[in-house]
Length: 193
Image 1 (cartoon, rainbow, N blue to C red):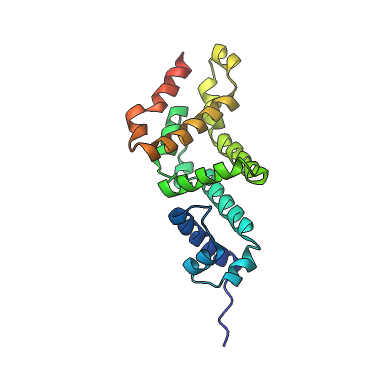
Image 2 (cartoon, one colour; image 1 turned 30 degrees about the vertical axis):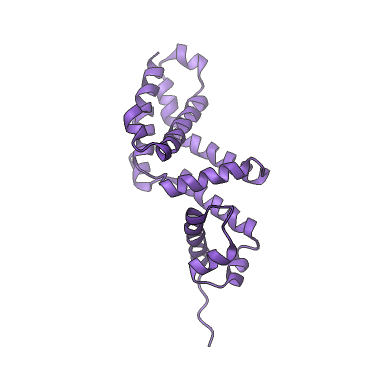
């Protein structure tokens, strides 16, 4: 007797969660559809039904990671920080960029060097992520006509993204990097200069 048909969204979530676990353990280059299917306790055919190829599965995983990165923590979004340095600290302190997800995103970044499709997806997500800092960047430049004439809110928001992501990457190499070097204080000092 055949089993009940699972909701396609739930099934895709199950596959992506399994792909994340496999990628964290073996890396993107070593990920196989067969191993993802085994991790998800599904058949390879069912994985291929939802993702037509390994490339489609990897793109699905990338899109999922980028959505997670940009969406952020709903509770934190309900209490927006009041200053740009606070926004930066809030992003980093929420711990959203967990070590394994950060490592997998870095692997995608490297794959993106040779893949325009991956590069376009990352670029679009980084633009959406930058937009999350735009309001705080505009506020930081308000009333600073001399600074605002040289720096656009978009460039300041982009710098904020670079600080957040750079801090996460540095933390992969050296635990406690952000706490030790406090780049948010440096951003505040730059804004005052």
